[in-house]
Image (cartoon, rainbow, N blue to C red):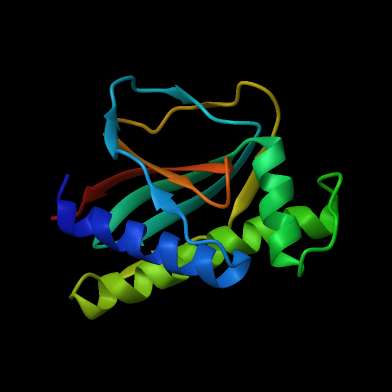
Length: 157
């Protein structure tokens, strides 16, 4: 997988999370997931990609992290449960990250389109991208709020 495709996801994620929460996320060690399927945290937002590169991106949050991020996005209002508004905020965060990623890629000559985000909740959500290597971008936003961004893409020839 080309690093030129991964860096825009990192740039966009850090920029959007900082803008929406006021916390600059710290980048952990980026790594390749060894298994063809992996377990997501309790809240996962999936966005598909088409165009020059195709695949999917999964943003994973623990429930605690999702609540904290949703609260920050809503101006610090206390969020105690993942209701419709907080789920919408988390989905919109993913949409904004992917929109910014698409803009960065386009400015570098790689056009992509994104699908609307799909939010999943549950314990031990298993994600299985078909025949694609997955790069995990771990971010820590505001204390111990972990967000994993799993990028499973391939270039179209």
